[in-house]
Length: 124
Image (cartoon, rainbow, N blue to C red; front, side):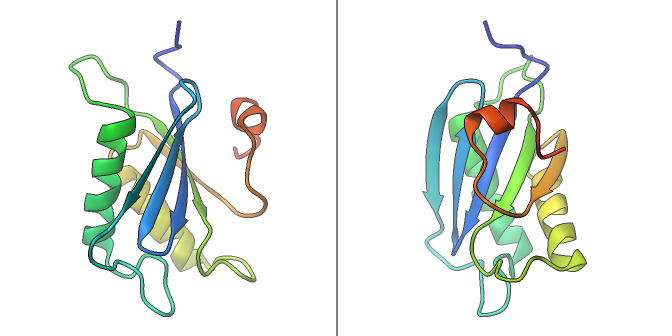
């Protein structure tokens, strides 16, 4: 049985797309935007559009219900992340996760996290 109080969604931010992984269920979902939300400098340049796309992806991988607990989102920017993220980019990702429906948000920089690392909460 899933622990309904500890739902984690790992989000890869790609060029105009999100790849989502529900850690507890092991399900994956990829959603690409028909119109760009990235530009040449920022992976999330059009916030409201990116928020809309992320909300759709979250609804597919973690459908809403009257008793659903909002998930923890671990945001991992894959596109335009060379050299690390600045504070503004981290803030964008945090605000994006929270406004899309996350209970809490973490921004991860570095190598892709494994399921074991996500379960062990190495991102916190």
